[in-house]
Length: 267
Length: 253
Image (tube, rainbow over all chains, first blue to last red):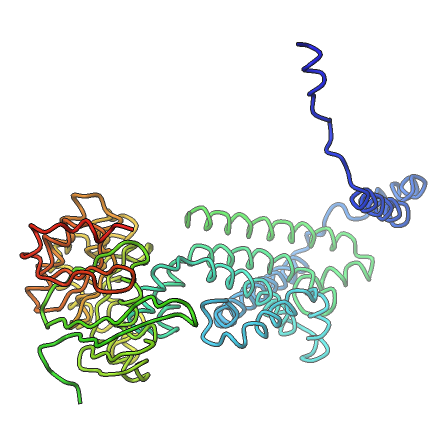
């Protein structure tokens, strides 16, 4: 009996075909090449550690000068304004774009591909690149930041709104379609009510994402607290920089806490 | 000019085939009077759903003539005819098709979609006070006013189907078309829904055509039974005359 069992023990791993083996070797080579070329060597890490410690000692304690804190506060307000205005406008524009790009829902099926492509374009270009484009086109400051968040939000919400619409319960849509209801009525009457939790969830994620993005947009001149941070580093005002980093940390954490609470309330 | 005859639906030598395939409906001729309740029965693939879709202009017919609610056409209705036909029909589906996250009342208000009413008939949010009132009256007709504010996903299967009937009724239709309205319900709820539905149709003088696999429902709630078999009319007779007859052949292969 024992012999029979040992004969039938399955192999530890599934056998690998020549193609799979080659693929694994290529992946392994890419990973090893990446690690050896762009990660720090132990010597470089050892050199860097004291410099980080020196930088930290120059950053502490953070600057608490009331004038500086007042200026930072208004820059933080501007950062939040960029995030909120960009997200709200982006969400408003995402809804019709998602409708036009959602398969089976759109009133213009011929243009689905175009609108999906537009949303992909908005999503795949990184926000800092959009910020550079808008700084050049509308000038330095918060307006360029808002435009950046708006486009970034359309790229994010446009895709997930369309998916939520495509996943909405089909039975009510068919029931309304049979009565001769227009595409707009089907959207407002059946698709949006069914997809609403998903739409709100996506909006909250977009807001979180926008706050995180808006704090760095200033690095390329698109307004907000990032501009202060860049100035602080450029002028070696490390105590100012640490105060700004702490403020960014608090504001991002607070926004995550608020959206998390809203999401839980929604569920 | 619509023909206000006592005949709600009439078809002559209606045939339907998809592409070059075998005919799904063969030489169907029948007349349905205004106010009549018709049970359309037959096994799966007998042609019930195809016939219903042809009647409402969702499918073109291959040959024959159709006269539905005063709109006469061959092959396919014009766009205007299709609109006119749909405006006069109240649909009820097997899977009621309610929007789960909306209240029973909002779902009934949606019955106005597709009717004349301009921007008021675009969404349940923009509906006029008259529409909202009419929706309450329709809920009253199916005895569900106390559930008006309940979300559709909190209703039982039978209650959901009654809301779907109210949604169809609010359109003040001349014809109810119901595709297996009791098939997804337990026997008791199914009888309750069919009882109310057929009584409502009689009370409001609305022609009712329902498909069913349930012979008891067909014989109890319809004035006339039309059985399809292999795409042709197998039986077309008043239900009173049929009770003693053997109907088993309808579902035989």
